Amino acid sequence: MVRRRQQGAVSFAVAFVVVTLAAGGALVWQALQVGSFTSLWLTPDQQARRAYEALQFREAFEGFEDSAWKGTAAYDSGLYEEAAAAFGRIPTAEGFFNRGNAFMKAGSYGKAIVAYEQAVAEAPDWAEARENLELATYTLDYIESVREQSDTGDESELSADDYVFD
Image 1 (tube, rainbow, N blue to C red):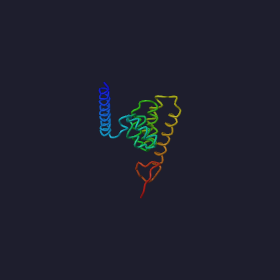
Image 2: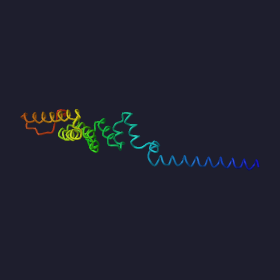
Image 3: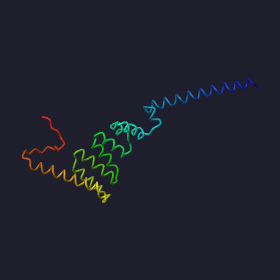
Image 4: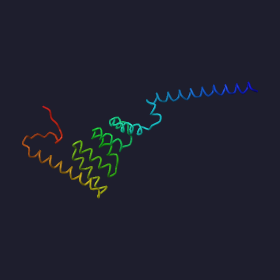
């Protein structure tokens, strides 16, 4: 009877080791398939959020699937056109407002005006959206008036924030 118990304990121990090694091997194989061990446990948005919190905005932008976070990471990276595209997938007043902000930073004042108009249409009582619409309109009007007053005839698309090196 004692011998049978010892054999049963040895069989259990061997089976436990074999199962543990097989599970470990499967985890390593899966990690190799997806590229990293964290990919097994974290969603792409969770991984991107970790990069964002580490101030690695470009990496976060590439990793996010959520449009709001993707736009925020692109904006913080200085990728304003990409931020505007991401915010454009959010059909809310906040999405339009953030899109307008991205267009303003990119120097696309006409597009910013359209985005702010959409934000104001969605949320007429939103003072910041109205103020940004007025600012974008004023900025575009000012740039156009300066271009009209200049005698250079230069039709380049330079804005107040562009640099030209000769």
